[in-house]
Structures are given as structure tokens and as C-alpha cells.
Length: 269
Image (cartoon, rainbow, N blue to C red; front, side, top):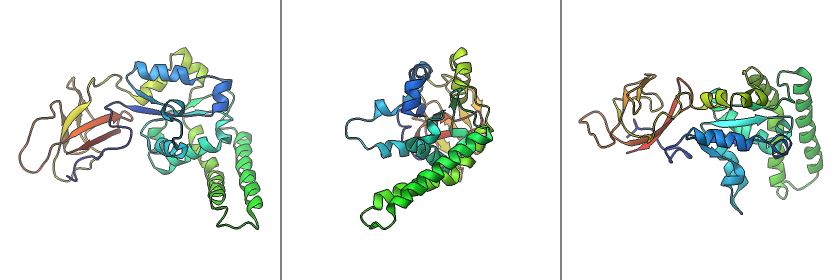
């Protein structure tokens, strides 16, 4: 049982889920999501967008936390993005939950230079002032009554502490501007999200885990017999009904490719 990978939210459909983190204001100024959605769906990817997923009365924070835990996130970087409380919360949750570089597949609007010193200082100052302003307004107020505003100020302060680190990291990534990606029909972005393209028509397999294999490391074989990165003694088979005896166990799994050498999988006995 302990050798099988456990199911993760958003991976139970058998498709690679792609979440987008973006500023509504920037999207109104430079529309990109319709192109992104069409490109992802043409590749068999499950595109997850707030305006399509959230129904009337749904909790916004729950979806934001889902983005923070997702395996594939497309942040659409813009000036508005780095000044958005919602966008920065999502990006910070992705950062804190690990595997940041493998999990984000950024798009950059042409009006922002992530490596520019003045730009980074501008956003550092912005969140410093935003946190300080709210903190000043809360002085002398009953903390038991303003508990949610206190928590909001903690978020502002958290963004302030990490924004330079976040911007420095993403500025070190080779992020093509949107115009360049569009010239190639977003192909460089899609290849980063799903390097092997439409790899498995029906990605439901059986898994044999031998000994105490790391559940996030295995040798994969797709429906066309292609083998991928071997890290531990575990194998994918094309039939979920086969059995083995002793030392191992079987379970259905669905899996997605995060990068050319990093696979995520979910499954159960």
C-alpha cells in the first residue's frame, strides 16, 4: 500500500490539468486566455480557469489554493500581476509548496522586464507600503474583531518578504514574450507543459511497486512502448487487470508529465 502513489486533486480525470494564474485587468488590456485555452485543449490538456470553474457562491480562496497545489500552472506575468493580491497569493503558494521551476510555465506580456532593478524595487516598495498602510489602519483596533484583516496583512507582509526572491528566480528563466509565443502558436509553452505531446490516449495503467520504491519515482512505459526516466523499481503496464505475486501490489494510476525528467502520478489500490 505504501508503495502506491496517492491521488492528488485535479488529476482524477486522466488528463494533464493546466491552471492559469492571471490578472483580470491585464487580460482586458491584452487578451491571451482564449488562445491559451484553445491551444491546451487542442493538445488534450485540461484547461482550468477561474471564470469557468467557479460557480455562483463558490469559494475563491479554495480555487486559489488548488492553483497553489497544482502540477502545472501558467502564470501570465504583467505589471498588474505583481500588484494583484490574488495573483501574488497564488504564486506564493506555488513557491512554498515546492517544485516551483518544474511546475510553472510562464507567459510574459511585453510591457514588463522581470530582471530590471528599478522594476523589482518598484514592486518591493509597493508591497512594503501596502502592508504598512493596512497595519497602520489596524493600530488601536480590537484584534479579535479584525482577525480577518490581520490575516490579510500577514499575506501582504509575506508577499513583501518574498517578492524580490520570486522575481529574481523567474527573471532567470528564459520566458519568451507573448508576441514571440504567438508567432509559433504557443508551441514552446505547450512543449514545456507536455514534452511528449499526446502521449497516452487513455492514461489508465496498472503499477507494480517493488520493495520500498519512492512513490514519485518510477520507470514509465506508455501505450506505444516508449520508456522514460528510471529512478526506482516500479513499472507501468498497459493492462490494469494483470496481477503479480509476492512483494508487490497493483493499483490503477493516472499520470502526467511535468517535464522531460519529472513525472507526477496519482493512484489507488
